Image (tube, rainbow, N blue to C red; front, side, top):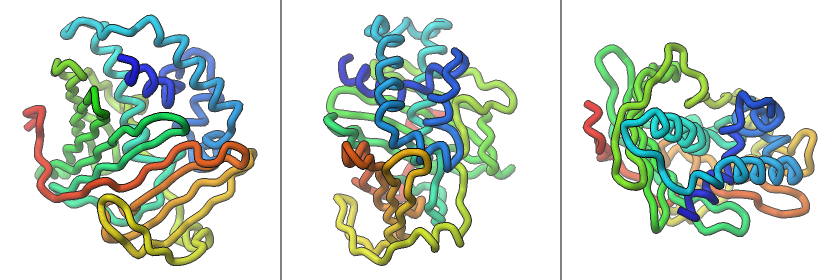
Length: 269
């Protein structure tokens, strides 16, 4: 379970929401400005990771499936997986929408940690306009899978999950749910154009693309967030990362694979 503990420490400050740590909440799921400024702040990041680890260290064993403990544990876990799958620093720049069946896998690397693969897949659009999506998080040892039914506007309606031991179940979703999934803030085209520093040929494990290289300076911290945008990748980005002036790249996500044959693996529909 060591890799799981490290993963929870990376994004685990989300789990502290509601316990009085508003600064950490802003840093991970706030709007674009707070996401950039706090996301690259070294001191804030260290406090978030240490706080999350201290809270989760006793939970080195998964709760039993079909119990309230398992449901609560998976709900908290889903918050982090959705956050990193759908946004960077609380917002998203890509303008190319996923089509039903399209999926991407990004290799996520944090500073001084081994890589984790993040999947995002658009499974199906229903007749009423609601959409099924899958997000997953895996490394060489573990894999976690979530399938979610959402409205076009991003409201979460249903959530199914499979933990690293293969246990599957339905996670309760309250009306107007805004904790598990927070839609990323979208920036204007004019703002993105103003932050574009030029064209760049980018080679990734998932292909080579001509990209628009976009940089935003951090506000309130010394660092920046970077995107490499292309309409050849579902979601519109081939790479994105957050940098700190002193520590360098804090974390980066690079396209590993993409395809168009996604379907449910949790028998969600």
